[in-house]
Amino acid sequence: MLKVHNLRKRFGGVKAVDIDDISFEQNQLTSIIGPNGAGKTTFFDLISGFTEGDEGKVFLNEKNITNSQPFSIARQGMVRTFQLTKVFDRMTVIENMMFSGSNTKNDSLFRSLMKLSTQKNNENLIREKAFEIMKDLNIDHMANSYARELSGGQKKLLELGRSIINDPKILLLDEPLAGVNPKLAEEILSIIQKLSDQGITIIMVEHNIEAVMKISERVIVLAEGSVIADGNPEKVRKEPKVIEAYLGSGNE
Amino acid sequence: MTIFLTAGSIYLVFILNEDGPLRILFNLLTFAGIYGLAAIGLNVHFGLTGLLNFGHASFMGVGAYVTLLLIPHAAGREGEITDTGLTFFPALVIGIIAAALFGLLLGLPAIRLRGDYLAIVTIAAAEIFRLLVRDLESVTGGVYGIINFSESLQIYKPEFLINFSERFELNSSQMWVGLLSWISIFIVLILLRRLTNSPWGRALRAVREDEDAVRALGKNAIWLKLQSFMLGAGIAGLAGVFLAFNYGSLQTTTFVPLLTFYVWAIMILGGVGSLTGPIFGSIIFWVIISETDRLAQLIFENANGQQLAGVRFILVGLLIMLLMIFRPSGLLGKKEELLLDVKSS
Image (cartoon, rainbow over all chains, first blue to last red; front, side):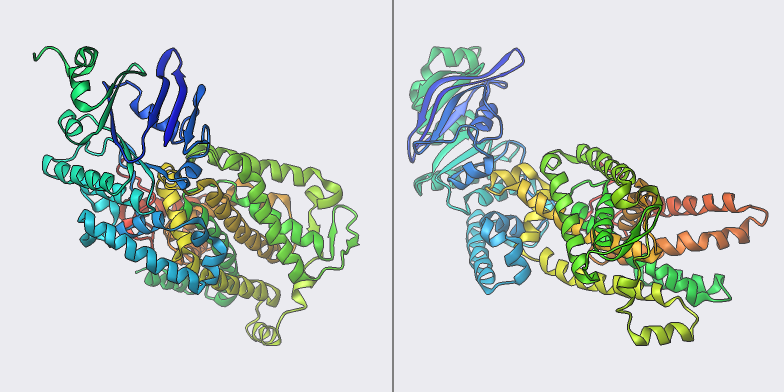
């Protein structure tokens, strides 16, 4: 589904990402872990079009998306979230959702000026869908609050909801549990699990090892930009290199 | 409170000018209408989309120059009348489109820049425009400017306005320009109200909040910003045309950076992001600008004209400072959508 070939990116002398070949299978829940500075977020930036790589190619459904614009990659069904939540603070929760659910045609200046009835119908459909998702995420009671009034965890939920409203094929989640209390983390995990069950391919960067091991079908470990382990959680957990680089050997 | 302030400032005009307050009031309202219109355009850029545009004067200038060059006018030292055969309204439409296209032209390379960098580029572009116009003497009249163009607009002046003006000893030409600018504000605001409440307006606000998130959600942020840039530039172009007709002659010195900052002050006074805010901001701004001389004369009896002129800017600055401290969202801005966060962060 998503293939990466010879992807490299340097920042000055630092090798941020140096990956020979990875492919992600459809409908698999993959987690990428690794110490800080291992290149996880840079890897996301590279495949989602936010950063241009030095070399290498990225294929989405056999189509070359290397150096495509982020919005065009998103339109092809691969949507990402951010490590630091990026909700639209001075817009309401429902506006956040509906902006994401609306497409370029619906947003057009001409249609908006003419107030076409097709646009109105579209908006109603989007609103319904947005409420459905918000209900699932348990933020529907906040629909008319400004997004900046939400708690950190609720913002994470909003960002998640915003990214699934257009039924993406691949979801890139950058630390979906960061800064979230344990109870809400549980909730978010079960939502991610549910999305995966619905057939969305999920690739997630996360530091919470317990959570990762619990729900992932595959775990990839990055260190200094390269893959040092790749496989099911059980296998990765036992890999000596991983224990040394990341899980920590001191405890054993 | 805002309406009270605005009414109060208009009342001030009556107190301070015992002879002929109406004349002064309508002169002031004409300027307020024109600058208010320009501020509405700027609000599309900054309030709605978050674009820091410090070259607003150039958009006004492009609108004014293109329109005036298309109607019968006299440019330069010799001052012979040239005529392309166009009447005022088609020329105005072309002028507005030209201003919007200038926005596009400037936007194409510059709109990718963030925040302050865009501000620097726009201020530079506005100066380039002004100097270019000044040096293209064969077309634009250079420093001699453009004159003898008013007739194209004044032939449409309605009868009632002439009668009204005669009765109160007002300048009917200026009244006509003022009336047109306020009608334009009305029309522009109706259109903008539609747009800001629409999916398009929602998309622009999203761009204002976080461009990366917009891109990550499959929207072309650059195209949205360009559209906003063109729309605001077009509105500024319209204001520029009225400004030229109000002066009766078009000079390059009109479009100095100071004009841009007047428009910024008006937008901030009225409330960034508020649709009708610039109207009230503009009236209050112009009352201060035109009445401080008299006000200051009451306080400083021995001051000369030059010293008094300084006082008005002290007052404008003071007013903006007080506003930022006690009401940072401006007169009509929504507190929840505060855009100029001067105290925190």
